[in-house]
Amino acid sequence: MTSMNHRLPIGNRTKYDPGQRVQRSDLETCDKVLLAIARANRRGVKITIWELPEITGMQLHQAFAAVRSLEFGRLIVVGDDLADPFGATLELREAGSDRLRQRRVA
Image 1: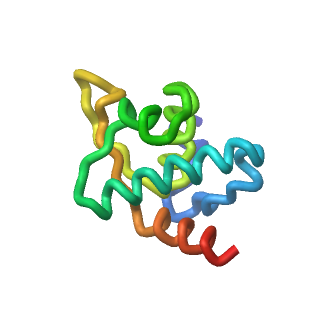
Image 2: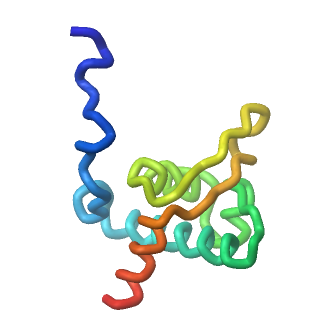
Image 3: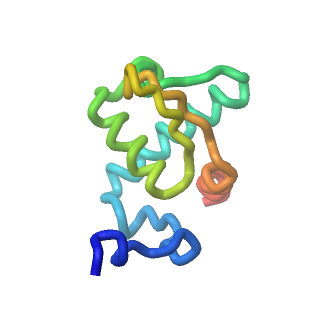
C-alpha cells in the first residue's frame, strides 16, 4: 500500500460538521472569519489572511487556524501566494454561504 491509497476520494469526504471537528470556541472563531470573508466578497473586495486580525480583532494564529479549518471543510477557497502565504486571497464557496444562512436561522 502506498501512502496515497489511504486517502478518501473527494466524493466520499465527510461533510463539514463543526460540532465534531472543532470545539465550541473554535466554531465561533470560524464563523467570525467566515462572516468577514463573506462581507468582503459581497463588496467585491479581496481579503487576505493578513487582514483578518484587523477585521475580526483576533490574533493572526487564531485567524490562520480558522482559515485552515474552513478550507478543510470546503467552505472557502484559499488562493495560493507562493511569495507570501499569509497574502493568499480568501473566497467564499457556496457551502460557506449555506453555513451562514443556517447560522442566521438558528
